[in-house]
Image (cartoon, rainbow, N blue to C red):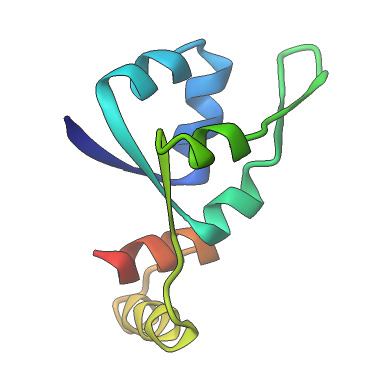
Length: 98
């Protein structure tokens, strides 16, 4: 099974489009711990909040949580800034994991 490293935007959009279960069926999903904090809910077109709970999938091994040391996250942010890129915490931790 192939792996997929998801950020918050991919995760939320996949839920909005009804594609999340398809992704889970075909990929081993990896999340940076900061991405899990960023994806607690999403709002649909009517602005209704839909809460996301990944605990069962993490416990069952469907989602793998990645936690990187703060020093490596800071290095990723520094390199992004040097290249004039604006990245969020979840993206920085995901980049550090690679």
